[in-house]
Amino acid sequence: MFDAMDFAIVHALQINPRVSWARLGQILMTDPSTLSRRWSRVTGDRRVWSSCFHVINAQLRDLATAVVEIGCEPGRRQSVIERLSGEAPVVSIHCTSGARDLVLTVSLPDRVAVDRYVDEVVGSVPGVRRMRTSYFRRVFKQGSDWRPYALTAAQARAVSETLPTAVADPKPSPLLLELVAAIGDDVRRPISGLQGRVGRSLSAVSRGVDALLVASWVSWRIDFSHDLGGWEEVMLWFDVPQSDLENVAATLRRFPQLRWCSSMTGASNLIATACLRDIEELDEIERVIAVRFPTTRVTDRAVVPRIAKRMGHVIGYDSRLERYVPFTTG
Image 1 (cartoon, rainbow, N blue to C red):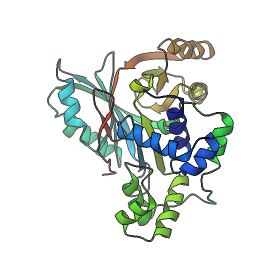
Image 2: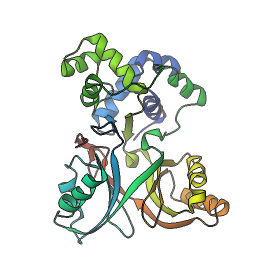
Image 3: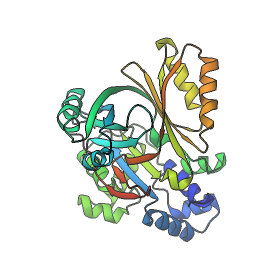
Image 4: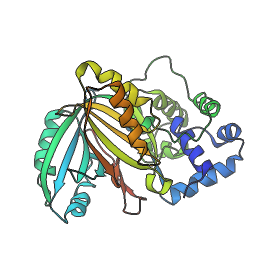
């Protein structure tokens, strides 16, 4: 299991994944070698993993992303997971309670590519009985923005101050895209290791990593086994009047449990996931939404007893990382 210091390290690296152990040791008042040793232990035990990826296609536009709800034939869910977990466009796979067996996140350069992929690849997997696809519209909170809140406000600010500053948003370049691929499955990979992968000078690689840390089109993540960490995840679908959509999303964002939230196409026009210490926390979230927005309706809710894949990382039944499948822009 995790302890308070493990969560503090995770929280700090979610803010700045490249902060030095020496600087973080000063902020947490802990010996840097202890921090390094703990990080090596939790990643070596496959309880924590990291990723860096870009969210644009070859035309420098946002990827098209869809939620694909799948109903499986009885007894075939695991075989479906095994078939789809190695697919690069299938970014995440959640096992859920309720009307569907799996919820997939699929990302490709455009909606035509997503539509064809879902029909020809996902739909042809033996054991898939039915599918329903909805497209993301506006993401109100990214999963990479969720925190375990293990740092004090002062500590979190101090870690934020270690991030490089940029006058303008760095534009994608061949070097930066190469670096994203090189650092994709290990955000703490040393500069020397990155240099060996991209074949550029140490100074160019160092400047490139600093640029990626502030680039709006790059996402950095530190994820951990929620089951081993004592959290469980739920998914909520809402039908929200368009005039209230931003206010409902803003209200949800105020809950520290909220992990991710996006508007979407379909009968339910808002979807959210929350990380809970206790399932009863869901009652308070729903109560607040019901009181403040009486015309908003929760159309469905599901517990996520298992996450089989998250942002390219395949996760086993024991909630530990098995392998990384880099996802591409097609």
